[in-house]
Length: 222
Image (cartoon, rainbow, N blue to C red; front, top):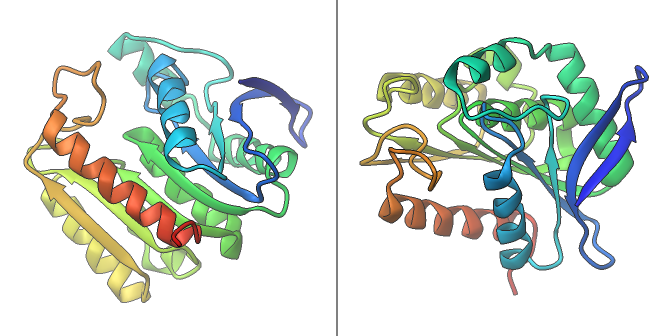
C-alpha cells in the first residue's frame, strides 16, 4: 500500500509497498512512463502472490504524478534527474529494505531504471529484469554491475530494436557480466494489457521466465 518516506535531500516521496512476513528479500518495481498507475499496482500484487516471502516495493519516480497521455508522459520522463531519482531509490531502499537481498524489475522507461538501481546498489542486488527498456551501453559503467540481468524484448519494437539489444549483449559480454535475454515476436510494451500492442501469449511466456529467474536468484526455489 502507499507509504511515505523522506529522502536525504529532504523531499517527501511515496512508494507502493506490499510487505511480506519476516522477509529480508525485496523486489523493486519500476513503472513505465505513465507513472505508478493502477497497472503497476496490480502487477505488484501479482508479484506478491507469485513470490511469497518477498516484499514488493514499487518506486514512484514522478512524485505522485500519473498520466495516460503520451505528450504528458514524455514531459514527465524528461523531467527526471539522475541525481534526484537515485536519491529517491536509495532512500526508499534504506527506509523499506535496509540490508535486504534485492532484485529489480522495470518496464519500458522503468527497465532503464531497474538497471540503474542494480548499478546503484552493488552486491546487494541479486537480480535485475529489464522489459524493453533502454539499457546502459557503456562498458566501463557496466563493469561495476554485480547482478545478473534478464532482458525481455520485442522483435518489432521500433525503439529498443534488435540492433540495440545486440549492442547491449556485446557490451555486457565485454564487461564480463551475466546476461540472459529473449526476443519475443511482439511490439514494444507487449506486456501491458492496457496497451494496444499487448500480446497475451508473449506476455505469459515472459512472465514465466521472469518468475523462474527471480526465484532462482532470490533463493526461493526448494
